[in-house]
Image 1 (cartoon, rainbow, N blue to C red):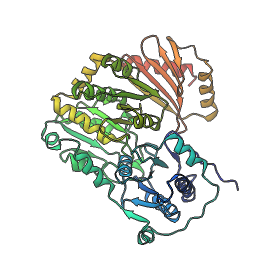
Image 2 (tube, helix red, strand yellow):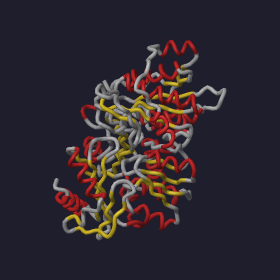
Image 3 (cartoon, rainbow, N blue to C red):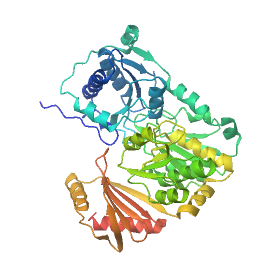
Image 4 (cartoon, one colour):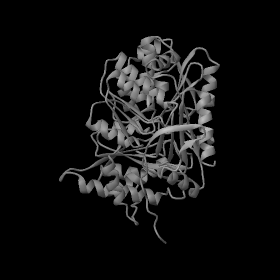
Length: 471
């Protein structure tokens, strides 16, 4: 029987539980990490790894398997006794000066998935070089020692740490929670049954809470903080005048979803613009802005208005994090809601981003709608949408190949002036909007990204695109 080759995608290795995501395959990846650490660590230094897992099925078991492999290889492991978010693990790697971090998570993917993310000593995603080197070391066969965490604790190879409380202590020093909790800005928070569920109740105790309990199946929903998955949060805000902001985080709490007080969704493009606007215009901070290829071109317009340098990367937060390690970065973000800001670790963090925005509202006394209106004064009004299409693989590849070969000349009545193909194909429409076609790096889907000048135009563009593609 041929052993399956395991590959890291846009953000770690992900697969369907019990099909490809098995204890044995997790052990293969953990052994590759162990071999890489032993080969690259300075002579005489014992490597260490922080391991965390989110609320998905089997997380504890897969984390303990990873710890068993690493400890048996002579690598010290630091691990919590309960679930932890991705930002908690990244912060833990930095604070404990560990060699690497591992998060057992499939982030925003559907419930049947799990995954394996690598985190670097800088407190963010491991570099593309590290990931490629670890992937190359994944062997076909591995021997699993089968020792318990308690056994490794007795040998001194495993230590228990409380990543959640370390994270809460850290974040409490970053914001004036006395002021935030005494302000008129009351919020609703939807944890989406994810690993951030215990944080907001402790730092913003008067919040209205949704889905802040453990459910490995996420109640049948995909834990991705998009409007289509957050109808209950939107309705809660629309029906509760005292609530001024809605915050949601995904399965491992590194992505943000946001609503204004009326229950209107505020997408990640607007969040990135709000963060740049607040940190630079109000807080006086400077630095480079780094965004993924799928982010709105309005970011460029704001950066030009504020005299801030801009860099565009391939899709995947690891590319943004690599820039943040090297340069002075004000905001780094993706269309998918993964955003990092200056003053924090070079990592996506939905809760931290939410606290920055809550601070923005508390400091100014303005509503989210009013703050978005300020952004529009700089970049103009726009509307964005994205369709994720589960297509037959042959059809998906045909569309992607046609796009890459320049096979589309217009989308119905919407013509375009030029294209870019940094990661997928992006079409700049003559009306000032854009369309992008890209195959997902974490799911078997084709993504269609669309931006127009208003909601109706954006819906029309999307339909014209789908008609042109024959969908």
